Length: 127
Image (cartoon, rainbow, N blue to C red; front, side):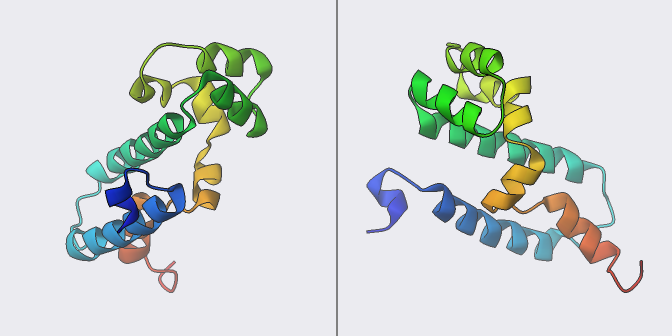
């Protein structure tokens, strides 16, 4: 039985499948010279991953504890962690973005669509 069939998907498995999908997508669509939607897709993907973390944490005390562990101030962590707004909204709050930075997400295993596009169109040998 795959993890997806069990109902719970770990972030490691999610990043693995997401990496496979993004690399395949970039190999197909990456030849396009049109750059304009790339940063927007990258931003949407990071927000979606932040939302997945937010939903995985579930309880208010878990949200506050995890926000504190990634460097968010106590006041911001409590106000965001106790909020009743939905995970999509919370993924865009300043506290969530300040804790789950782009560098932090990269360390967790998220690859950047923008970086892949740049590497395809401007290889390191040409720079």
